[in-house]
Picture (tube, rainbow, N blue to C red):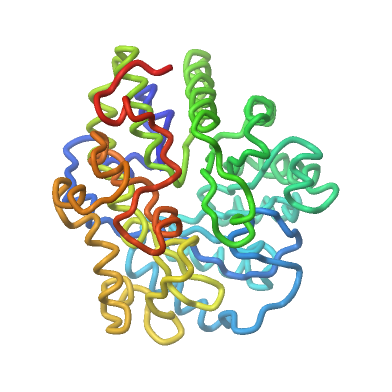
Length: 406
């Protein structure tokens, strides 16, 4: 994740310690040792059928999902392993019959819990239960305003239901976040979405760059100019909120190149936070320390993956072995592939870059972004772990010599 609010304004944010080494004194070795933010798809069942769903979910039951007893075992293991953050996703996680049992157990064991939901099932009563359980925040997905959102979600009224979910959370002071996947189908509405965020007093917003997985593989990723324009728009709004004294966290996800572009902008504009932003991004390492290291996924069947999109790489299954042991490389069937993924972060910057192919091989920002989002790079390079991320939108003159944005 790239926290535009933190890097552009310098204002402290809730997860600075996780992303930037507590803001001071961090180094790459510490970043590599981080326990993973764990995304757990607790069910594939969903009441919507979104066009960009990476899990290809529908309103049906799927065999083989974890039993309640198995889920309890997983929660205890994650708590003992001290993962820094646990995110329940789906499908639609709130549709699971043991959802609130799982929420209560997770928070009681000290896990920092986030819910990723379409928001349509958040009644006033359920919002109150989430607040009472000390859920860190509820991330509600939105893809546009009104009809645009309904078209993405393939259900009339989905937007209005999601808005009610936001309002119900707001009424009980439950922190909410908006999650949006940027595609060519909705990027032109980004200003309206930001206006909506202001109107609804949403405290946290994450803009995801599209990863071609599941039904999302049928959508079009942003063109370079569209991606740049979107980030410019987000930076402008972050700056405006800062000047207004508004405390709102804005992040971009699944594209470490956003950090490099931010530094290009900062260099061109002689931004006062340039050197601090450069230091924090270098500590984080971008794609070098993300999938398979700083991010993990447990799918609905209990299978562990490097992240929630990289489903064709299997590291083990929590039905047979605890997640903590799988993640520590104790599964002989996957230890080699896990080591290969992590080698992207274990080598020095020079050694990693020497193995890269494509634009990453001679990019001056490689130590900052780590070669972009490695899952997307692997998808688009026939599984090659050393290929370049095609989602990068930096221009050649910026990659090689640095220059004014324009």
